Amino acid sequence: FFFFFCVCRFLPRRSRAAMASSARSRKAGLKQLTKEARAAASVPQKPKYTVADLMERAEQYYEQFQYDLSIKFCDKVIEIDPYNAEAMELKALNLLDTERPDEAREVLLEAVEEEPDSGASKYMYLGQLSSGEEAVQHYSKGIEIMSAQSQQMAEGGADPSELQELHQQISAAFCALAEVYLTELCDVDNAQEICQSCMERALKFDENNVEAMQTLASVLISMQKTDAAKEWLLRSVALWHRIGPGKDSSGLDLGKLSMDSGKGQHPDEGEAAATAEEGEADEEEEEEGEGEGAWEDMDDDHAEPPSFEFRMNTAKLLMELHLVELAIEVVDELLQEDDGIMEVWYLLGWAHHLHGDKEAAQEALTKARELYVQSKCDNPELLAHIEELQKPAQ
Image 1 (tube, helix red, strand yellow):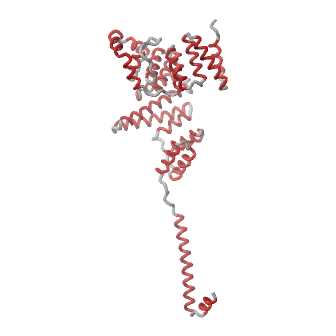
Image 2 (cartoon, one colour):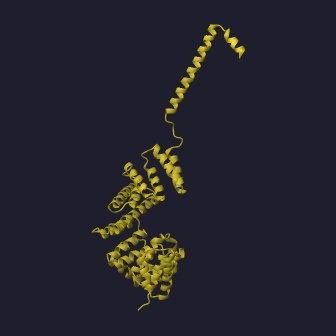
Image 3 (cartoon, helix red, strand yellow):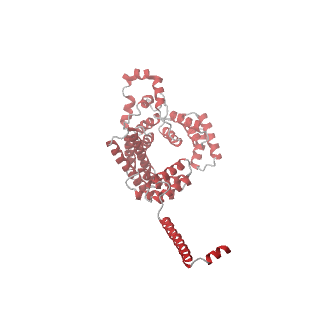
């Protein structure tokens, strides 16, 4: 250090001035670099992931039931693209699956504001989250969008399987719309007629829609058109349950009915009886010739059974239409899947009671009562009916 001091001390003034100038230049250069770094930091950086990448991750997490992570990625998409209705809808699905319906509804309404005339699914979800006339408006808008899409796809020569899938969605939407008029708007003057019209339109888009057939049967029962109700209910059941050849107590030829169930006809009350009797004389030998082989072929064509709850309702309607043997078959199948449901044992006991098998009825009703107590069920009317059915005949 002393040596360095001595050298600097005896340097010419010009050299010392040059060194000072060089130091000032370096200091100015550093200051300039700092300014440039700050300027670079203030410029928006290109996102590391694209919107498509983030949506893919959000969908993956949703499929893996990691809802919180999926919501985070949806929020990242919305942060980059505030008008992304697809991300909003996926976020709403996550919120629904985490039992936050109010938040989901708000997000879906935002999606509607961004894309009011496209994306029918958000309207269908809003229909489920709404009631009364508001639900009708959402379902109707969803149907309108899907119908327009169907027309465009048909005119553009779309893949038939894709068009069929869309038609099934439209058919399901009409079922959802009819459900509103069957429940919350049942007091509307023409509610039954609206329901019947919805089901007929549903079946035009999907002639094998078992929900539409069963709902139509329920509507026809309320309109006291029992023969037509039987026809439609049996058409529905025949698509997922092997009824078997022969006749039920209704007098309808169930074997023939099942084989014809996919033709998408719309019989009225008079046609129902005619269908059962038509061509009996000249077709009897042909039907006998088909025998069990025809039913074996049909088993391969049967669709997957509907939901557990749907088939419970099927059993109730069958009992209401005095198709008791078939109702017992349906309930027995439900018990094979889950024998711990109180209401299923109750239905079985009731069906056996109607069928005149008192011993089987008592056994099923006793089991229903045990499960009622075990599950701490709170349905006094149902319990009262069980007790009434268990009373000895007077």
